[in-house]
Length: 237
Image (cartoon, rainbow, N blue to C red; front, side, top):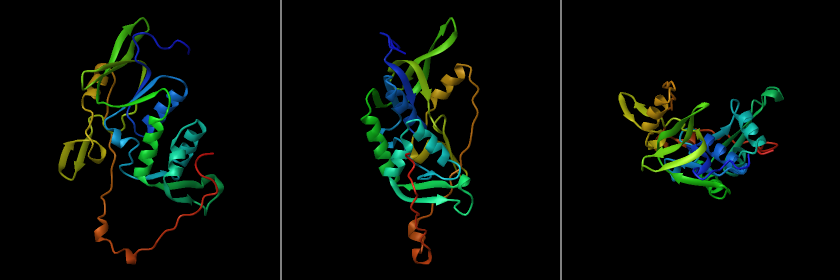
């Protein structure tokens, strides 16, 4: 892949979004020697855990280990930010044992942000992407970069979209409906129009979040502590 850069290209790869997927994509590209840009709506919310501050469990622990095997960061950060860990399904055979870690979600974010900031070949910027730039070639239309809310255009050989639930995000609280992203963040409204203009079919998906309990209303004297269990080995192998 020598010579991938040219005089009109700002980056080899631009990653749009800095959640769990975007962070791993940006780190993987940079660690392979590609000049990489990761853009996010907020530098304060890199790798944010707005819903459930846990990593692993029966449905995801194998994915965390696969990410680790490929040189990813999630397992390392989860281990460093862990406040409780349990090995689940121990009453069954070892094939279904699953490690789950509860993380200090603010520490997890800080670890991931520091990792991005200290990775060679990687820039991180706070930008709202409004459009994918493209051009017609002999092999068909190809993406050439991004356009941002500020009007700034950045060129790249490839663009990775890791936008999560922010594209035309809509919050529904009972009968109240408004545009927004997770945890009070702003949505990305215009990028969806750009994707549709490129001929992509868009569908709306839903994710549900349970109601939060006000800790001031809980009598913790009547609750039972569930201690963590020491796992024989952490996520990083």
